[in-house]
Image (cartoon, rainbow, N blue to C red; front, side, top):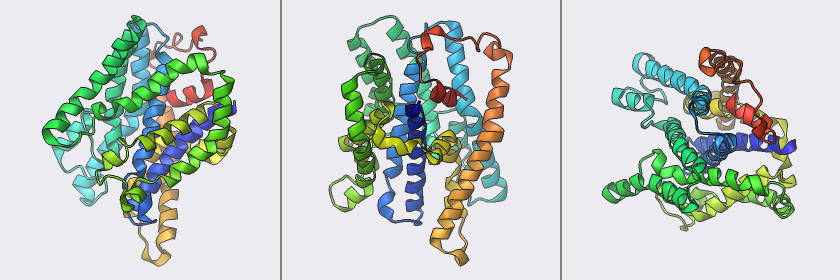
Length: 361
């Protein structure tokens, strides 16, 4: 069961990467860890999300009950804390502290975030994720209709077209699903292939050998370091999402964790698993602490440790006393058809039970 903890630990590592990157952006640690390194963590989040959606649902029938369960499970996992964080930030920035890190004095910007169109700050990934959930249902339906792989590939390419058109017109990419769809679908396709390759001894042996080198490369292949060396673009998207080197490392690390690499055993340690469990709250809530915790008398590193400790503590409180109770309350309502939703699905006996239950909690 160790590899289940590795995936949770990998999610914790992704959250930690984002936190490190923002700490560098705020001057707490050397700047080479900022300005793009956090995007590497988001890449891991998106690949994990695509993999889990496919692994959980792609083999189920696309009917009203399954789609409703899917939609409600996603709402339970993502929406409550996002909405709470949005409204809290709106109230603080408009009525108490205009200089708050998550400033939502722009009402139109707040409404775009509220309706999952586009959001600023770290919130930008949540509308992108929600948009993926809608698109995945179409992919799921096409897959169950047994359309050709070429048509499925065409659909994936089609999801990227809006951003390509936008870039052609305005020379910049919007932070919406279309600009990042391939990241999610890397995970989706991996889940489809994994069903037939999960017991492949060659891949398992390769993962055991490659896991630790990929983890080391992750912290050596820093986007900002490559920028300072003159071997990367000044455009953040081009030196992160569009850099094939980043994707080789990110995907190699993900596959190694998926196959339970012995070299990544440290991801199964309790601190990483704990960070993985609270990763959603830590991702959404950490930035104001890095921005506002500044006690001159205790020094820079002490300020960073205090900010990180407070962020982790708040994320734990959120997970323990808000996310889990809210999830349980919603799942106990009639919307989830209590009594049916808890039935065992024989088609899922070999699924990644512990990690997937944690992901859906």
